[in-house]
Length: 224
Image (cartoon, rainbow, N blue to C red; front, side, top):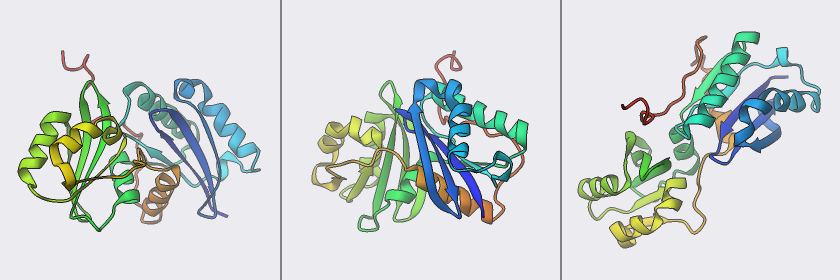
């Protein structure tokens, strides 16, 4: 029986899931403010109630962001500590790639994924059909202006929690060319993190190094 865990921060909660025989078997969540304190107790609870031993885990898949600085760093520090203690392989997952993979709709020629980067900034992913053509971070108004200039009169499918936050600006900028669902997918599921992790594990696409958070932007302290 193959078993592994997946973890992520959804901006609101910290999630951890256990996969058995490549199927999500159980999951647990906690307020993101308690990530550092609750990581080990949550892991222990998840394993004990499913009669799984830590040493039997094949790997740990981790959504490495981008996302909120403090919570993301807590998650990465915790899984790196787990790796140090057990040598469990860590597989980092790009959160922008993950949400795009999960909610991509080939009906529309262009896709824009937006995640909240705070202070009117967004992390973004732009794709033409299933090909990712740009990723980064930018002020929301500047990004919308750039996309409008580069892809005029194109139907663009928007999703991510940044879309929920700036929906009014998106509709103002693109009108009927903006495709925004009534219920906007805000972030990827823990199932997708686990699935992408398994895919990388089966292809041996991982190393033995510690993970680093995918911030894409500098913390204000780092910019001084």
